[in-house]
Length: 71
Image (cartoon, rainbow, N blue to C red; front, side, top):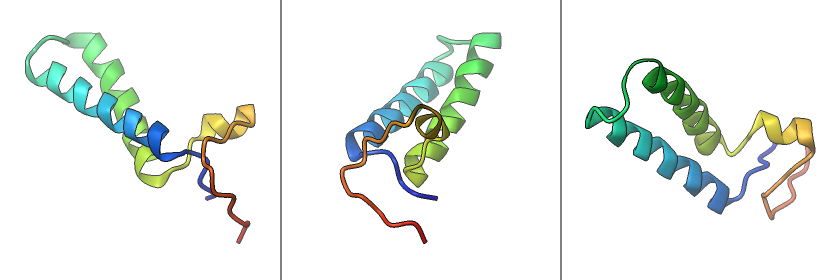
C-alpha cells in the first residue's frame, strides 16, 4: 500500500473517531445513527493508522507530501 494521506488529514480522522466515541459514550447518539457513525469511524481509524485511503485512489487525490516509490 502506498500512503496517500498527509498528517493533517490523518489527524482530522483521529479527532473524528474520538468525537464519535465520546458522543456514543455520553448517549448523545443512539440507534442507527450510532451504528452508521461507528462503522465510518472504524474506516477512518483504519485509514488514519495506515495512511491509505481507498477513496483517494478512486479520485486520484493524495495529501501526502512525500512521494513514495512502488515496491
